[in-house]
Image 1 (tube, rainbow, N blue to C red):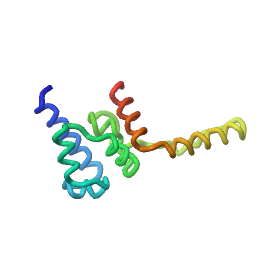
Image 2 (tube, rainbow, N blue to C red):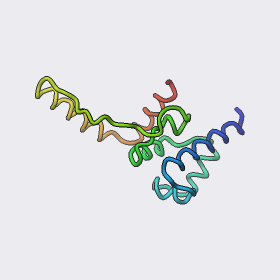
Image 3 (cartoon, rainbow, N blue to C red):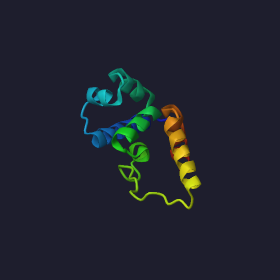
Image 4 (cartoon, one colour):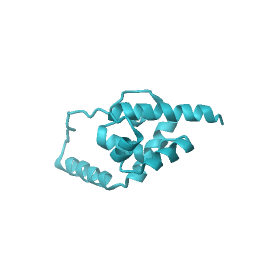
Length: 121
């Protein structure tokens, strides 16, 4: 594997993260993500953005993880203001129950699934 290419990708991804967050330094970014500055250095050494950072950026800034990783797609995830229409009250209750369960899923699981979906798209 080409280490220069990996480093370049990581550097480009970090620049996109800085752009989307408005943070200029690793210290500022670490504070936003709730991590140690050394974690950023570790990620750079590995040449990859940790999935939990993508989840945190998505939650805090509506950042599009695909755009962070690849530069493709919109910078931000947009959520439609249109509410789903339900035919019955049971459908509405079912949707709400699934939504509640999804909010209880650990970030690590969401991050892993997000990375998996991006890698196959």
